[in-house]
Amino acid sequence: MHSRGFTLVEMLVVMTISAILIAVAVPSFQWTIARNRVSDGTNQLLAHLEYARMEASRRGNTVSLCRTLDANLALPVCSSAATAAADGNDWAVGWVVFEKVLPNVDESNVEAGDQVIFRQQAMGTGAGARVMIHSSSPGAEFVAYQPRGAGGIIGGGQTFAIDYGTVLTPISADRAITSISLTNAARCIPIIPLGSMRVARTLAGACL
Image (tube, rainbow, N blue to C red; front, top):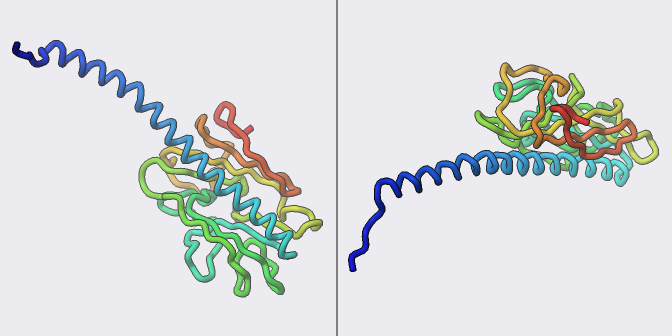
């Protein structure tokens, strides 16, 4: 008994079904990637905010986080400068956590004598889709925690919006998070003046 191969009609049917399955699966796969990248970025930033808060209490000194364009420098420079691929308030370029050591008092910058206690590398700033972490604080990009009982964070509260997608152009020095339409995968970290924080979802493209 001889076996026969697939007919042209059967092959076309299989190809059509495969194309339909791929068309259905790709958006779901892209959503999974976006959700996982946002989750990773949110967890990293939240962990380091909590870490800075804890270290300020443990060390009895102010501990700050600041956005930096090169976390590997011996004396990292806190910066709100935009780059060719990142807004001036996009923390995905990296950040550092550092302890302020007297007589240094500038919480927004790493000064000689300060102790750098963590360096976060860039989360990818090239072309294509990537994580973006925009802060709601224009200008100096930092969060500073005072020792316990000294009043929480310095400079009031702010919010971070973490999302995944293609970077908006043109690049700006400070892209206000109220002007960004966040995706459903995005998460937000609002920080109140006393220093506590939480993870919030989005509604209609904005932080809740």
